[in-house]
Amino acid sequence: MRPWISCALILVLPCAAQAQEAPDTADEIIVRSSPLAPARAQILQGATVLERADVIEQLGQGLGDTLASTPGVSSSAFGAGASRPIIRGLGEDRVRVLSNNLSEIDASTVSPDHAVTTEGLEAERIEILRGPSSLAYGGNAVGGVVNVVDGVIAEALPEKAFSGHGYGGYTTGLRSREGAGHIEAAIGPLVFNAQGFRRTSGNYAIPGFAFSEPLRAGLAADAAQAGQPAPDFARLRTENTQTQAGSYDFGVALVGKVAGKSAFAGTSFKRVTSTYGIPEAPGPAGAAPATPLAFPGPFIDLASNRYEGKAGVRDVGPFSELRAALAVVNYGHTEFEATGAASTVFSNQGVNARLEASHKSISGFRGLFGFEALATDFAALG
Image (tube, rainbow, N blue to C red):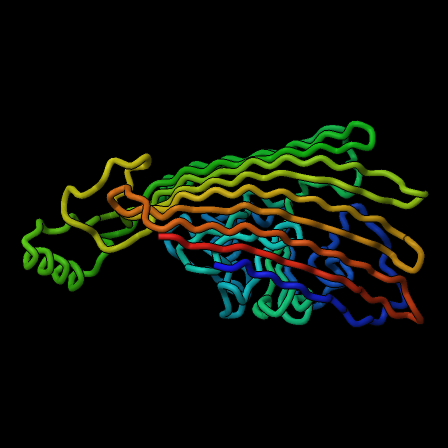
């Protein structure tokens, strides 16, 4: 397919500033995906912010499952490996999924069995925008925006020279084992971050058969008519819903002063891999192939390399803040048949650049100007 290129000018109309600014607090959360980057307490509607403790509390298998219990948000479902947020009934390319305010650039909008390449285990916080706040991210964000902030590129010096956190969990329903960790170290003006996660899960446990009695009878009749053995119907489990997923992410940032102004600049690299089954009607008995995860049906094997860079400076002339960000992504996945033979190969290579300039108060009004460009080269072969 030909490369797809999109450019957009971002203009957020000025809004009246409050007569009194709320005092700064150490735990103030700034919503970066919302125009003018307001504090969470200043957003009256159309935005939800889940901090890491909230994300862990409702953590699921994939980004959609994690956010499914958030009011106004549901999830697509195609097994444990693939889930994508649905906001107010809109999904796929009508909901834009971002990582640190930049597009994910994957294949999750093409089909519901394609996984999103970011999720809750990586998140420092997740921001969900609805309504006018999402217009700064283009027309395909009509349903809303989900922005996963991982904090791997630091924008300020941390309070401690070294810190970290970890997570481990086990889910009985699908025998899922998962773990994640994040460490941060500061050496002078340099701030280093590293994080990663790993998850392995089995088939969904269910009561009874995965298929209804009429469907089992119909499939058995079809097999008999074709002269094939009767299908091996799964019981007490949803067949072919195993998953393996993981990622690692490294970032470094330089934080300090430029001509007396607070500034930062940093870069990061992220590698994501995932292999998961696609549930389907059962095949003949004994047809399960010898694949790496012993999938009895089709499965997807994906990998994504993501390079990010961003920089910002505050209080420059008439601007309260200037920001620039760039992401370069090389994504690909292969869909395998139940026999283990490769069927279709998807690839998506893209670049997303974003510039924002927030001006200072003019007669009590503040506003933001910006520019965004997105170029992708998508292909599906086979």
